[in-house]
Length: 427
Image 1 (cartoon, rainbow, N blue to C red):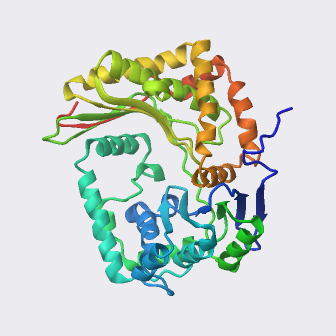
Image 2 (image 1 turned 180 degrees about the horizontal axis):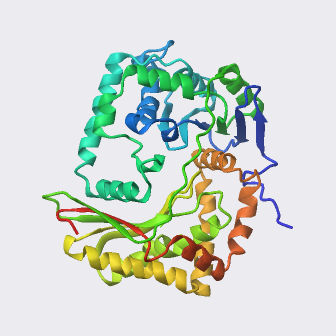
Image 3 (image 1 turned 60 degrees about the vertical axis):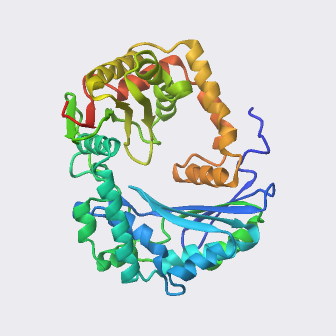
């Protein structure tokens, strides 16, 4: 039987409660520091916008703190600055995020600002136009960035135009320009609500006190029009490698992204794929990809692999920045490493080293209230259970070399990949 480590968040020390309107609240008491951290998540994001209004979810999230019925933009900033606190919002494909940090005695103010921003924003014209200008400037800069353009080429080729993952979360210059204040206001009104919302609190506060503050600011929130989570369209299987290249004259570096659709966090082989990815392009000096493409052959300025494993089928990919003359060779050697991972069992030494690395870094993620709150939030979003952190080492250490080989071969087929390239010349 696995012994429960008292210092790890688990079912014995995480206080979980569902409010009357469905919001799930999780509180972890930690009096090692006088701070308290809030991390939250709710259903919103790219899934709830149309391609013609791409970027609406992100712009709305960024606009929330530009003014509310209770405070204008300067008053919101002052309310947080006066107590040395911070708060903010973010947007993804499936969910929006929010959070804040303050001294424990100021938790009520932080939650008041967050709730007010979500529930009663006014979207003042001058502030929203200023924000739009900032977003458009960022997009214009990104359009000249080889890493960004290679990534966009990769996503737009891997996911068809009817799939939300095809689009940039920030939108495009055209779509952001066309968004109206009515679009923003209506999106917030119709999509935001308590259904599916999760709020985690970690820090120097009693669970009962934190729950009472959350109740006061959120429990009376209702939205009968809040939509259900849209279903993702089916993804067609790749029948061959597809290559998409973007020419950016004047650049001295090319960036390459190559890969395929990976597992969601709910996939039974997610942990096996995650550990295989550690070996492929994360461990040490960026794993086998870093050792081969960057260190041994000198083909890349940086090279690594990434596997996100989110709520849907996010990609598993290799990314590298290379001299334009080395693009094809860097791609070939990267594909060699994908083939090797799917064809050969990793050595027992590689397996054990990466198991120790993945298990060993877990406590580092829990050294701060930010890490604790974010981890507990992820446990709830992905339905991992409150004892997940206790069970995690055993789950990782049970994985075998055959498990990793099977996961790699399932998702990374060397002759059926998508390759996105951006640089000074088409390749």
